[in-house]
Amino acid sequence: MKKVFNGILILSIILLGMNFAQAKKVKPVEDELVAKKEKEIQIIESEKKVKVNKKKEIKKLRSNARSKLKSSEEAEGMYETKFPAIKSNITYADIGGEVTLSDCIKLAISHHPAIMSAISNAEIYKSRVGQAWSNYFPTLNAGVSYSRNDMLMTMGSAYARMMKQKYDMYYVPTLSANMLLFDFGKTKAAADSAKRTYESSRFDAETSIETVIYNVKVAYYNLVFAKHQKEVYEETVKDYELQLKQARAYYEIGKKAKIDVTYAEYNLGKANLNLIMAKNTLELAAVELANAVGIPEMSEVVLKDGLNTKEYDVNFPDLIKIAEESRPSLLAAKKMMDAAELNVRSSKRAFTPDIGAFGSYQHGGRKMDSDNGYQFGVELAYTNLNLMLLKKQVDEATATYRKYVADYEKARQDVYLDVKSAYINLMNSHDSIAVSKLALQQAKEQQYQAFRRYQVGLGDAIEFKDSENTYLNAQLDYYSTLLQYNINAAELERVIGAPIKESDKDL
Image 1 (tube, one colour):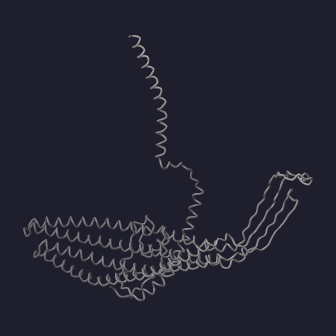
Image 2 (image 1 turned 180 degrees about the vertical axis):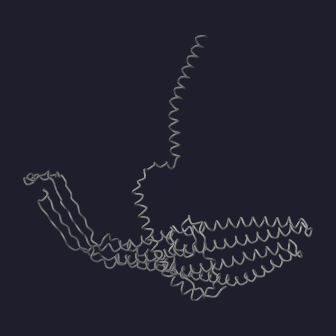
Image 3 (image 1 turned 90 degrees about the vertical axis):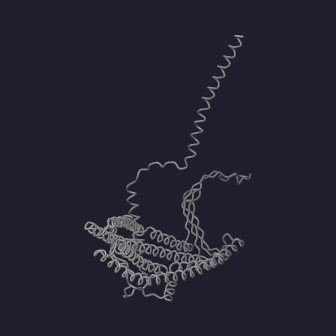
């Protein structure tokens, strides 16, 4: 029995040792799998720190500055072809002081990345015009080569045995040229199509410029409105401070109850809260103007201009005519339609052959200067002639042209809708200004009368608060209507793609 027990104990110890060894062997494998899994989960590995080459960075910055200056000058020229010249010499270093609307427009044209991107995009399409004409330029090839040759002899004649089977071969140099002489108008059609596409991209750049300028105007007018709004709330706070002082004086002599003082303190506190919110709105409007200009650092500027109070001389038929002649998006759609039409011609001319010239010169042989040769001539050739493919390419070009025709018609209808909507909005805001101005005058008179009544003890605090709120809302409504009139005028200029005339008549 004791021998059996000892045998079982020894067997158990052996099994435990084997399990421990197996566990030790499996653990590194498990650790390796966990590490591998963690590595797979890490989608982006951290980039290695690269030492900055200061000379290259300076060179890059200078190149970017030159490109930016060239793009800004081109954008300013595109803007001034239809809009008045920007009479502003402000630079980035001058934005800490006072700025006008023209200053902000000049800065936006010089700094906004959307304009820089649109100008660069037009340059891309401009380069494709030259790429299309490059078919008429010669294609050159040049090179030198050396080879060691061992001929495979399959002939058993005496002449074959006399031939040198192992030899060197030199081609020093090898020159060749190919040039297209005429392709029945295929290259011209492709170049004309690329030119129309480039012109369309130029109009797209004009659209980007006008959109940026519109956003600058809206942000500028909103900042002016926020400034007026803060001034209105400051004036309201002063009125409530004066009313509180009057209420306390009446309470001390026993002419008014304590509730008038409490009511005046509540009104003053609420007015101060509104003033704080107005200041926050002003700061936010300044940041939005800086963003619209494309210079985030100019949020501390002081505005010189106010909201325009002159009447615009516009009529709808003339606006539609101007829009059809000047709206960049409509002109871009027309250029794309013309490019698609030329592309149809180009695809049809693909059935014609190419007439070209070729020539080559070789020098070398089994020794570097043993021989030379040349070749030249003309050829009439079809390249990759696949009638089925060419037919389907014509079908594709035709369908594309029909699409752009429909797109142009849609753009024309959108222009009519945009101009009509902008014109109606401008007229509505124009008519609303006279009403809000009259309401402001009446509210101001009512507020003055209520305050005078309270001063002499005939009115109460509720009457004064109602008149003060009416006057406050009337001021904000007037400035809001004037703001909307300015924004609607900017919108109308954007949708017609040209400035609108301003009369000498005040609103």
